[in-house]
Image 1: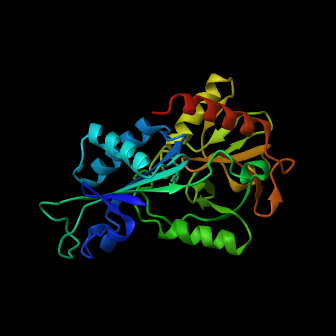
Image 2: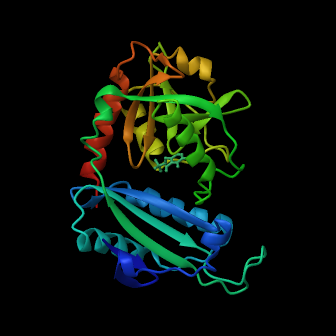
Length: 282
Ligand code: PLP
């Protein structure tokens, strides 16, 4: 692969970041993942806007302007002949002698790489995924997309150890979100329920698009917290993320959700998201 590091295009074996980089030493970095379908960027404007917000919340100066950032995304797709997959972008506060205090004149590090992946033809779409519920032990600013991903990584490993695909995280008795996606349920009355926006969850770009689409096709959306019990008794469940779009959840803690098959509302929203976002891809 050809990767992008601080203004340079390099084969991945030649790309380097300092051992003093604060992204490495303090997880002092933010990231974005943007899907690519047919060589085009999906929901790019949302990801660019959230990146700006994450940088602002952490006072990391942006190393690029919006036009160049889009250009870099387009160029990495072209240089890697990426048809379908993901673009990973990370911006850290950059290298500085190790100190908890931020450096006075930070020189942020920007890295992008691609990952080829079948998003549309993901075989899990047919069966849905299984999730476990486990405590949410992340920090309290989950609205900032930082690279502090150790707990989500542990959660995912625990899910795999228990033969499940992913974990839904629980705080104060309510589901916050999945390890790397937003969590949604569909009630037996056909209402879409998903946690409202706050610092408890990442403000998913796919979540926002799917909620808009749900409303436009006449699905009632309730943005509120829900419990694992409510999820287990729901008609349908699904997750949303840039890497999975809309993915059915058919088992929670070893029991089926509804009849244990991907539900009609979930399938309709997945189809609507794909149709709408592909036509808006840039
Ligand atoms: N929540 C968490 C914790 C995530 O890591 C992600 C994506 O990586 C999401 C939600 C979904 O966000 P998006 O739809 O913007 O990919």
